[in-house]
Image 1 (cartoon, rainbow, N blue to C red):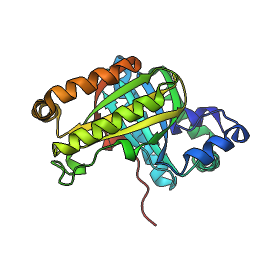
Image 2 (image 1 turned 30 degrees about the vertical axis):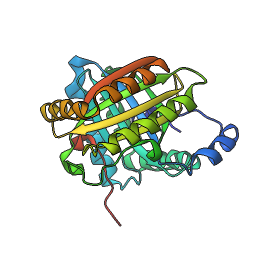
Image 3 (image 1 turned 45 degrees about the vertical axis):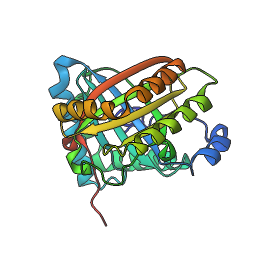
Image 4 (image 1 turned 90 degrees about the horizontal axis):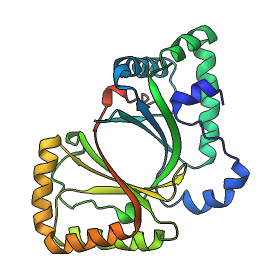
Length: 260
């Protein structure tokens, strides 16, 4: 993979497929896999970074790049880009697609495009995550439609090594609790299976906007009361670190290929 291309197309994972074979067979059938790009952008360079992303979207649209991505940006200038992949072998296919895209754009224009990102972010990292539908909650009658859910609260649970099964069992209790209260707001849980600071689980819950999210959150917490407090204590007892970020869906920085 060309290093500069991988900086933005979120697939610059230097891995050996031979070493991943066993894990791939175990994981790829148990939930959607995601290649995730994690960029910490300099506050003074947000406009330049976003302009570069939009130019990438334009080039991918023009040259019919086959892999989509969805973007989010947080209040502390973290930008996340999510690309669904079928399996670990699909990362190699993305590598080939990157090379083809670079050839179509041309060397001179590629250099111009990549220079737009120089100095715009402090660091980036890539990782692979897997969704955990069995530990996520989808209400029978959701309060919001997917297109209404533009505000995202993302929780990062850095679980103590060896405590993963216990953490997942506690999350089954969370699903049972919110389901029993018929809460109308869903949430999703995933796990980072390749990358840094493992093990880490990632939870997402949504709202129309910040005001809607926090006001509805108060109502939901009132429904679970002491049971929720007890489960939260059990959850935190299994974590070595916890982080939470508020972010927004960025359709203007996302890329969805046209259907054939």
